[in-house]
Length: 400
Image 1 (cartoon, rainbow, N blue to C red):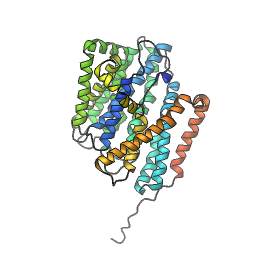
Image 2: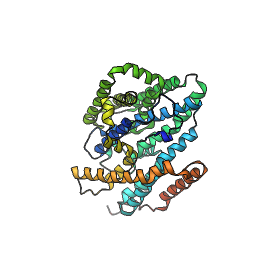
Image 3: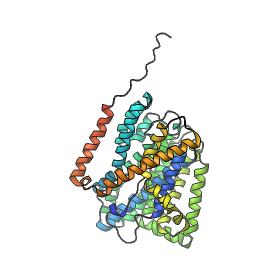
Image 4: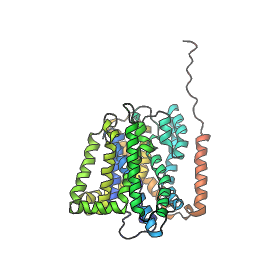
């Protein structure tokens, strides 16, 4: 759900490609899968989140390793500043806008959950909050919450908080940092898989699907593929067969999205998600290493790239739109309406909020940027307190 352009990538060294058209296309495929899943059109479309995770793990690790290569170290503070400028404006706009709309016209139960979930979204801990509330991910067609889709944003943000300091320690202590990063990421991803298998039971799989510890492998496998030794090994292994290999991986992902169901496909939580994440990470790596393959060229199709470019805002807005859209619409009309409204809001967010602050707002950097961040954070926190929540329903049992 994130994208990195050369303009914000920091020092760029030869041999690395921080931005390629095919990666925008992969984002487009991922967000379309998620949208079709949430509108009931693609049973395995939720796996698009894993494709997002793999992309994020690859791109963030590539960015940090290029910084190590250029400077010999990593600046977590500078990295976090770039992430805040990239992610916070659109997120705050959506949170504030949706909260006010829900408070004004939403049913009491939805108002209560929105005001209760908001602070946890702001703290980037909403995935753990939802688990503590027993709000199952697979109950999306039951008791709906407008911010429940942001569990994946929380997982990514927690990764962004922890991964740069780890790379900083590796950069300062290892002679061959990229090899050490590959080993650490691979080892941690196997540990995350083992934890998922251990915790997966016969009941609701939400704990292992949305828990940061059990989903870390999706991001870490992307990180593994971003390291120099693995990229070199992938280039040697694929070689002239990069095109067929990319096509095979893309076909495997597509088949799994068409046939998988999150509640009945228990194999997902005993290794299936790991295999899917590995295939996604390898496909990302092949698109970078071999941008002239048929798959990479197809992913660079301009309309698909454009969807990928607005994918972050599209992900933010699509679920609130689905929840709040008139329930009188159903079937294909509702799917079309959700797509149309979400695309419109995401486009406005991209060109009126995200890009101006990210690329042109000088006040968003340095001390003024820190001040703006503090004011916006305090204002958003105040929103959850100022808006009154409806009183809970009280059932009088004295007359029973």
